[in-house]
Image 1: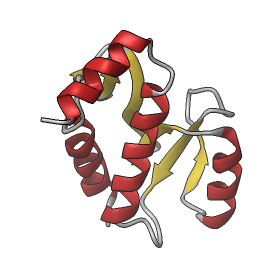
Image 2: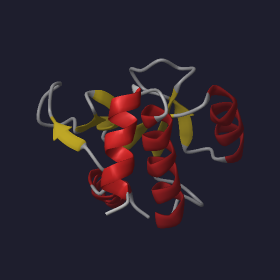
Image 3: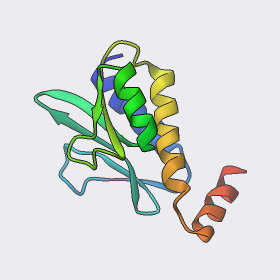
Image 4: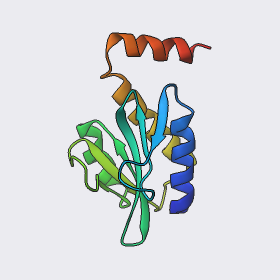
Length: 125
């Protein structure tokens, strides 16, 4: 799966989640997707290579970086809580979907009770 397809798929999956918004606070080249004003996905480009940044549990980040050469610490993000995914071997649509949904769920878990309830209600429709 090439980098452009990874970015497009990640954005599509992210925007399918309840209460998500796409914005461009860092310029038109950087897509930022938030849930209740909390970022869980960014797209970017580094040395002409497109990538996505996702929020992750720190213990998962180290494991993923060992398993996948195309996963690094989050570019321009907190290296402990974010990863960057570039195109590479074993990076496929199912993997991207799992990672985006995990990032979303991690951020949702930190929201307040009212926000979580709203998402739960929207998810059950």
